[in-house]
Amino acid sequence: MFMQKPKVVVLGGGTGMPVLLKGLKHLPIDLSVIVTVADDGGSSGKIRQDMDIPAPGDIRNVIAALANVDDEMNEMFQHRFQTNNELSGHALGNLVLVALNHMTGNFYEAVKKLANIFQVNANIIPVVNEAVVLNALMDDGSVIIGESNIPVHNKKIDRVFLTPNNVKPLPETVEAILEADVIVISPGSLYTSILPNIIISDIVKALNETKAKTMYVCNVMTQLGETNDYDATSHVQAIYNHIGPHTIDAIVVHKEAISKPIRQIYEKEQSFPVTYNINELEQLGLEVMEEHILDPHKTVVRHNKEKIAEIIYDYAMKNMNGKG
Image (cartoon, rainbow, N blue to C red; front, top):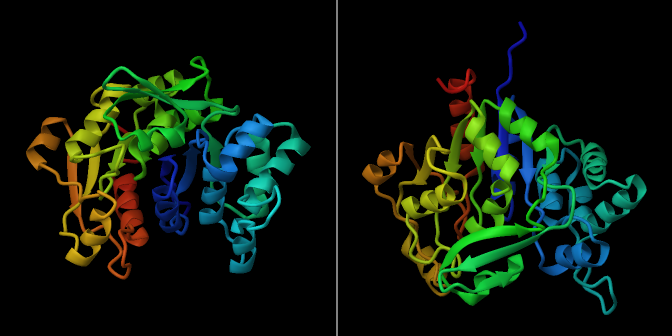
């Protein structure tokens, strides 16, 4: 008997998202991944600036995470050149995306072709199909231009916004959000990896209109220059300030204390465990999922991909009929 698969949409970018996707790719779900393209650092930023195309770095990492090819091919795809010429610092996968973009004349088509080559069983969608710049309005009224510049100023962020300001998402992003059973906001840099995906007006509208349940996998550690002194409530409130209240239905938080040796490593970077207050989160209308979500075998803070995938899958199966 044919069993219907839940439609799961994951929104995000940065380093947290691929870990989550590595767990999800083995599950019987209909998966769509909406990826930020606002990166302006390193190889990805240079390509965006020189070629006037969406930044490919986060897309590359998502393809690598969801790939069903041998390890050597994936390793080659992620290889970063260390040379004394213009290739230095570039990741091969970024250059392949540039080549496919030239061949197809369309960045999204390039992404689809590359995902097909790497036997990805998911729909990977760049949030927009053009080059964009992420900007931040700080609490002191100053404006910081460029995703990589925002954290280094170490000022309190009021809000972030994209330019051009009338940018339109790909229609496939809106369609995926409206048709989803569950939407997952992945862990990652809150202001520079997560919010760039969800602040575009048409996506804000879709997130407010969808019948899907929305789950936020909260960061485990704070990030210097972005979320200094933030607890879980502060993370949610920042999202609400950008896209409106009651847009998240559930939050996953890590309930176990971080070991002292690992805490000490992060304290050198002024990064600290994200605390949470269940009553405050419930007052925001959230179902709070307290779970042990870190990989116990790692000597740094990394999510347990199997555990997170299991939480998401169970939630998706429970909510296949949407809200209400």
